[in-house]
Image 1 (cartoon, rainbow, N blue to C red):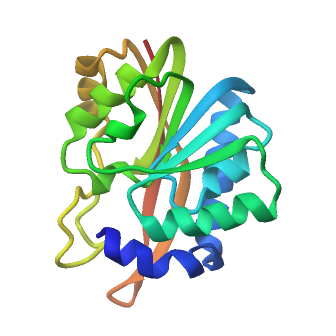
Image 2: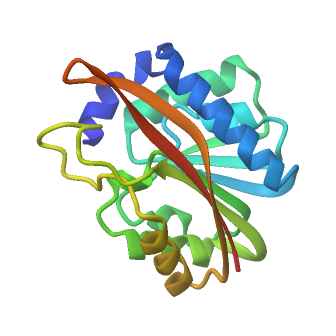
Length: 202
């Protein structure tokens, strides 16, 4: 999967739907939190969400497991003179983040690619400050047609299941809302894929 993202990185931002999706999610996040100190975008890709959120955090660390995405992101940071941004290539389990803390963590369309959901939510809990906020935006559970055959990740998430997993990870207050809907053609018909924003605090 990382190799596929590497190949798509240079043209990633050219798909307008991704840009609009990031703006809609950013708008929903800003209704919940207008500003923060240290932020982390996990599974950042080319940083579309972080750029859409600016100005939001005093500093933002953007991390991803795809070298191609990080390379493209670093070029964007330099071109935009985004001195409040820094990029970090991470490996599975993100040991590179050990010892760091953040006031806000956000992720967009990354969680459904991760096998160990419980472990990742536990990582977020360890990384977030006691007064911090976690924002997860991803697919509402769907029938598998979003990615099609041979996709090994999750086909979105059920609210009640993710809510339980967040509580088990140590987050006590969780809210959900639909913040964007993608429309894509499947089998000759236009199909809707809702995107949720889950907001969780400790």
